[in-house]
Image 1 (tube, one colour):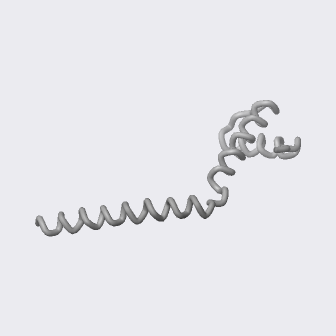
Image 2 (tube, helix red, strand yellow; image 1 turned 135 degrees about the vertical axis):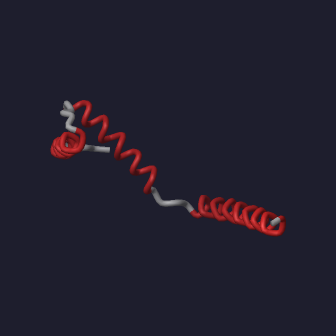
Image 3 (cartoon, helix red, strand yellow; image 1 turned 45 degrees about the horizontal axis):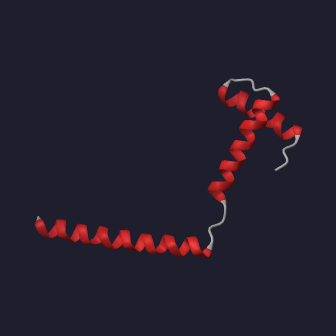
Length: 76
């Protein structure tokens, strides 16, 4: 991933405004690359296979939660 000097300067300005800390170019580049990498991981598109696994796990959790709630309600 290529980060331009102007993007680093903008990040340094935002960081200074938010945290009151001045970053040198090397530190700012490192922090910005880490941030972009984290954002990529959070916002990347889910694959159909991952969606199928999620739905299967979610159905299992919902079924068990509903069963627990039904038992708890009948115990009362």
